[in-house]
Amino acid sequence: MPCIKPKETDAIVSLSIGIPKFLPNERLKMDDLIPSKTTAPIDVSSALERIGGDEAFLYDLITIYTEDFSEKFTKLQRAVESEDFEQIRELGHNLKGSSANLSLVHLQKASYEIEESGKEKNIKKAQESLFLLDQEFRRLQDYLSQKNLSILD
Image 1: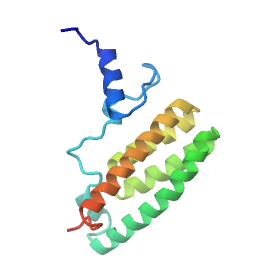
Image 2: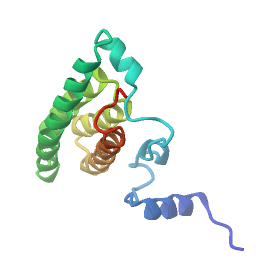
Image 3: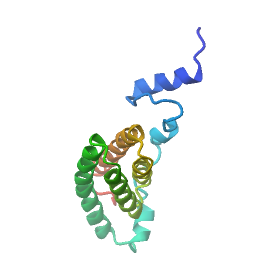
Image 4: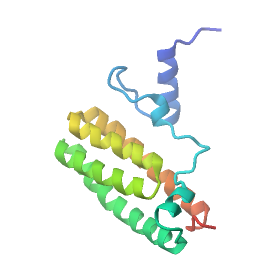
């Protein structure tokens, strides 16, 4: 049986889960790109604590967040396509804050990476982070739909 080297393992994992292969010194760590399947995309108890325990209000905030995210994500895609690093940074910063306020830790982390890519003027990192952000938002949507759009049941 042939021996697989660590770099080959990353490439195989990248291909099998649909993550583009990055240059070793410019890429995010694979652990950063693959969300933990055991961790929910939202920490409900933390989010409720932040807003005083009002479940109906949290539901409203999540609804607003998902609507706002779609608009910002479209703008972010355009900013990445046009390499508008200031817009990338600004949108990443905005999404990072709103994600943090709702205890959406994985979306917060992905948004941070977007923000940093704008600061660094690193288009490859911006593209990678945009992919991660999209994956994390899909995870949130799946989670909410599994809970019948009520995270509080």
